[in-house]
Image (cartoon, rainbow over the protein chains, first blue to last red):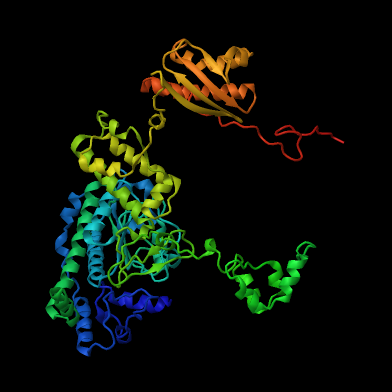
Length: 286
Length: 351
């Protein structure tokens, strides 16, 4: 696999920075081949070669339109600094547990307990939710990972409600790096991994953080004051131990993903893709 | 290299003189290739002798097809309408159908854990526990449901593996059983009961399997029942009469005469003494084989089995628990080469 070839288009399609900041030659780069060996970044089922050109153009339009807006899915309205405060997202661990790389995100310390800067949290959260929405819009596989037993059940339910996947159990060694052997030669790896708890039960960084970085899978992660935000693509500094906070995150991710999928369905119907139309016709015929 | 013996030399020479075609055509039903045929015969005969060692017409050597379940074992995964495939990965013991659709998205939401069926069961069970705890509280309730659990046992690990078509570890299995136990202690509704009962298997109650001989009546109208018993190499047949005065006759002789040793007579007495019916039954028995102790044991077993037809079920259960109705499986152990007896080794000499 060519990591460089798949990495660049992924960065391109990230809704973080608008496309005009990138030089022209990178903008024109086409996504990787839609073969069974590589992960299909676009996610959308590519039409066969014999299909007419306008179908291909419609597909490109559907996929390119959201990238032109900075907040196509309007994720800003789902939360506010006040709602984060009420969900106790700003509470961190004691100063002794503080991780060195979390210092930029910490507002201050009150009675030896670190307080996370909610302004930064809000901006990071907006970026992360926007990215999640774009991945879900492009029919990517999203994997929720956590190793906290208190919220295991909730996270699995959240994943089920969104129609995505969860892994809150013991993480087997080569799950991401050796997936060909574990699952089969044509398995499709997740396109986004969301960490609701970055640490495992012994307070060490979860193995999936490092493995996702190795496999070029973008990650979104809630990092508390004792976590290492280095390898996570979209860190969200915030509390990961209080029930209201975790419930809030689950609700936010669930809403974003459902919203993005709904939008995709609407766009397909709006542009009235021949493939969709044919599927509808065959459905009605059956 | 089988050298033909003197006695069948004539047969061999007769065979040698025959041509290949003639020998086959002569008696097709009885032709069996032997070593001689293989060496002496021409190409086709040798080929047939090699490929079909039991001959062309042996009925028991016909090819039989295996049951489809043995060729295609139960596989995990619900393939969609487009994607059906039977694939075997080299490292896994269990075979799986393809578990993702045409676009590559897996069907099960816990696919990436590696054990989706097992973890989805745990998820379901834990969900039920949470629900019940929310309604009723975390403490266990009165065990009115323990009655449902009597007479059944939890699934063993192999059965669970077979049910889920996945490989499990011992810890996984223990966790699962713990979860089910917790669920069964909480007061649960019919849905949870059904969930728990799926993982219980009935245990056959041993006492119900006891075969009770039917009571027969002889020409004088006396009720009796017969039974057999074995011990080591002695076999005994006993006829126990319902009403009698405690007389026992063995091979036509009185028991005192046949068994001069007290220990053997105690063995005969044991079933009656156990049931407090010492002088109430008559026994007529025949015994052969074995030694004196084995014959006494055989008669004891036969008498106990025959007595079952005259007593209550509880008493049968007591006799079974006392060991009166179990035939003793001990037999003489063979002597092994390099040893003096079955267990005794030769004297060890240091030098």
